[in-house]
Each structure stands twice: as structure tokens, then as C-alpha cells.
Length: 429
Image 1 (cartoon, one colour):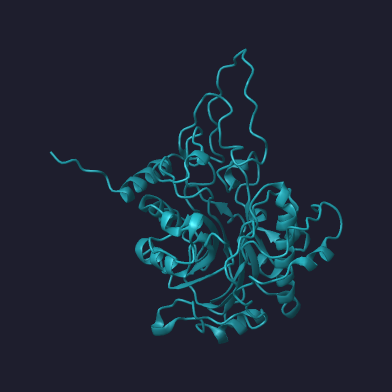
Image 2 (cartoon, rainbow, N blue to C red):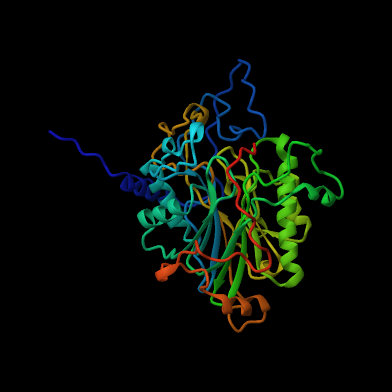
């Protein structure tokens, strides 16, 4: 007699429904404490290591499930805009890119349907109006993923550009509102950022780091009914503390881009968001805070008690994804609206290093990062007070693709900063 398997999408939905049915708690439950033993305990993982916070320090195995963040996105107020960022962990389609060969051949990297469905489930629960994505193969892959897994979500406007990374993944954007323009800065020279390292706390200079972005930011300018949003979607240099200098240079350069915008319009609505690959105490996120930008964490919903698990953004138990906003945008941020959305975390005995092809991940696993989001209540839509909103209305729709497709792969670079020339791929590790 033939056997029948439950479709992956139904399995994910069932898992999410089961996990959501439990009453929400202010923090993820701790794993049961193992009985004390006279035996000498094993040395815990070093703080900041990839497994710190995710591997159990006792023999008790914590089951796969929602460990961090909230399982259900909070409702949006009427008229609010939800802006979000999500590192989807190496999403590749099944179409071979001849530019990727050898150990980085993308034909070996095709993302399995189960994980794509889990990512789509997270995006649906997130319900962002503008979603910045890290680690997706490119524009064709983005459109295919949207058309296959995100039907009915309203993401008629998309952008993705080569960011100069040798592995072929990019930053991208899905938007329900027109993307007026977008640009990358692959050729930007970061060597002059040392002059901006004023004060203490900076990493020591390293001659072999910080010349260029490892992955250029993607800038997108979005028109929301006359309210202009400028977003820098970032994925800063990966690696441990030994790469802090490189990340700091990248952050300083992005802050310079933002300063150039603010010099022309101090009330501009600008944010930098995405994967910083740095903790809250590191200098990289502090670059933006010290420049007067407001972090999404300032607008979190739960401010008292042990909230670490609620705002952890990576399955290693760390917070390394952020959104920072200029004062103009922060004025529009809805208090208590910042959140991290739960997705399935593997059991504590799972070792990603031994599973490069992700054949042992649990059902419903989406990514090693969790989506972050914040809501805005625009006070300067068409006819409002801020000049940026008025100007945005004039240019709305210029980035739309031919035939009214709503895609923005033909959009022009921002007028205030020309797009850098696109280089060939190179290994910048």
C-alpha cells in the first residue's frame, strides 16, 4: 500500500500553530537544570563563539523550537508602516550562475523547499511593508522566491544588486511601496575612515583590512504616499574580534553616507539596518548611536526584567542585527513596536559545523538569524511638514520596471550620490 507524507508547508504551519497556542511569555523558557554531579563540568563555550548560547552546558538536550524573540508579530496600528530586516542565510535558486565556480559553485547551494517554506512563513508572520534582506543570490532569485512563496503579500516592488561578494549573495529589498532608486558602493574607498576614529574603544589598525566593503550596503529610497524613506541595508564583515577594525570602517563609511544626506535635509528619514556581525558593546553599532541615531531597541515593547532572549537575533544566543534611525525617522517610530520574530531553533545538540548541507536541521528551520522589525507612523506624508516627504512624491514610480511590473531593477541611482562602478567578483576575506 502506498504511503503518504504530510506536505512540508502543512507541517510548518502545524508547528507554528502549536507553538503560538501557548500563552506568550516575556522571555523564552530556560532549559531544565541538570542534577548536580561531583564530576568536573565541561568548559563552556567562549563568549561570542558561534555556539555560545545555543549549545547546552549540561547533558540535558533542549528541544528544537522557538527559543528567542516572540512567536507572533504584534499588530500594526492603522496607518503604520513596518520596516524590517532579515538575514535569510544563503538563499539560492536552482539556476546555475556561470560566474560562480569551484568551491563557490551555486549549483551545489540550491536551497531546499522545506527551508524556503519556513523562510516564507516567517516573512508572512512578520508582515513588513518594507523588508530588507541579506544573503540572497540576486534579483532573479528574489523574484522567483517572491512569486513562488510569497503570493498575495503585495511585494510588487523589489531591488537587489551585486554587492561585490565572492560567494554571490546580495542585499535585497521587498516593498509594498515604490522603490524610487537604489544603489551599491562596491568600489568605495574606506581607507580615509581612520581620520574619523576619534576617542577610545576602537580596534587597532590592520593594514590588510578595511580598504573596501566586504559586502557593499544596498541603499533603497522608498516612497510611501509622499513619505520618503532612505534605507541602508547592510551586512558587515563576518568573523570574530579580529575583524572589528574592518567592521568599524564599514560602519563609519555608512555613517558618512548618512551625514551627506542629513547635510542637505536634517529632517530626512534614514535608517541603517541588517546584520552588523557585532554585539551591542562593540564599537560598530556604537558608531551610529554616538552620531545621534536612535536604535530600534530604544523602542522595544518589553523593557523590564530579563529580556535577553526576547531580543536575541542569532541562534548563537547573540544580538547582532539592528536598526538605527536618524532623528527625523525616530520621531515617527511607534513606541513599543520594535520586536524580534521567533523562528525554529535547532536542538541544543545540533552542530551546524557538521551539517554544511543542512540535512539534519529540524522541520520549520528557516535561518540562523531572526527577523527584526519596527513600526513607523509617518507624520510627513504628502502635504505634511517635512521637505523630504514632499520631494519624494514627485519621483514616485520612476523605478518601476517595464510593463508596470513594479520591479525596480531599472531604477536610477540616488541623485545625491552616483552609483559606484560594478567590479568583478573578488575574494575579500
